[in-house]
Length: 81
Image (cartoon, rainbow, N blue to C red; front, top):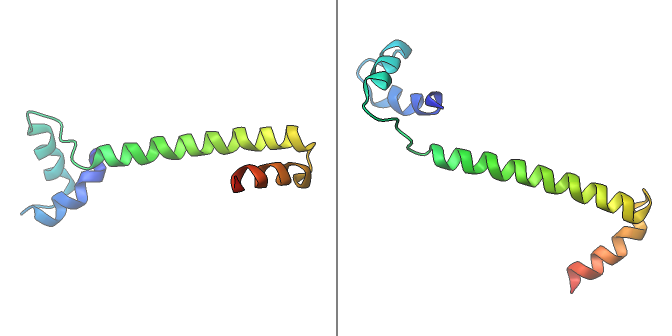
């Protein structure tokens, strides 16, 4: 995601054009990772949370028969415990 690093380059570079940025990025002997690990972590956690919510929704629908009230009481007791 080199586009995530462009704002930092734009603030600190003498020539902040996208063409100069691409030239400097491709001239590096390594791929800069900077704060990108954090963005990937956020993406992974978002996907995991969406999957867990979907699984919970399927489980609550199967458990409560499509009505939230029968599933709410056991879940509330479990969370209060």
